[in-house]
Image (tube, rainbow, N blue to C red; front, top):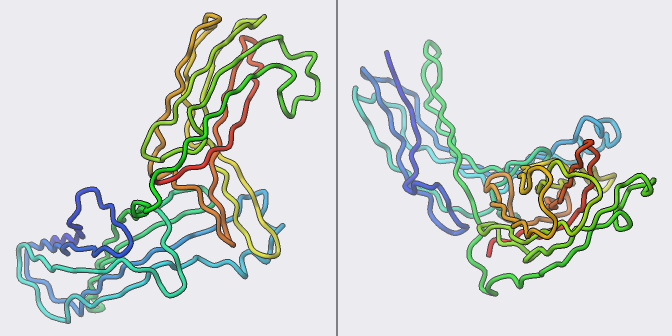
Length: 298
């Protein structure tokens, strides 16, 4: 007997804001009649935190004091025990998207050590001879438009030279070069591109590649200690080979939605972002200039 259980929300993009109602249908397709012991639908939103391998053991108290943070939790029995006829059956549902008491809804975010996820979970209970049917689907939560309006741009000009480099002990071995440019803003709207311009003014050795790297910095822990880890989200090549000196190279990057979110800071975790301009010389020696950025919804 073929049975298919599915959850379909009304909005095609699955994006919802706090206070809105999540509506949709539970869709059951069966080649024959089905007996069940009840169908429940659960809406839940959680923040899951974990430590990187290098920090496990350092913060032993972390596992005892920081459990998954439950932002939303709602269960509804959408059907009592009964028999469902063969063919297609649709069961409508509706959930108000409101946080639990004293909790705040954060935007959906898929990270490495911090994960914020909102799920609908449908379970059809069946007798002991048949396996329960379970279907899980994710929906996306985003902040509502801010009444205070758009964030104010923070343009930044930069000059990169051997002397300006951080974390380089032997600067004498670094080839002579001069790179200038600007970022249109380090206060960035997540739905708009990250833009700017870069110019190689001079360089005494050939350049192999110029790259733009987006990095997430995730901090999680508790009062006993915090672990901070930086991981790459994406890397975009903006210059290939030995680009001519004096040529304006555009900086343009789209923020990947599920792997970024508005910059976030709470007592148990933080999600922050940085951008690196990476210049790789012909001998594979590389230099990096780091910029902290703040992501906003509007």
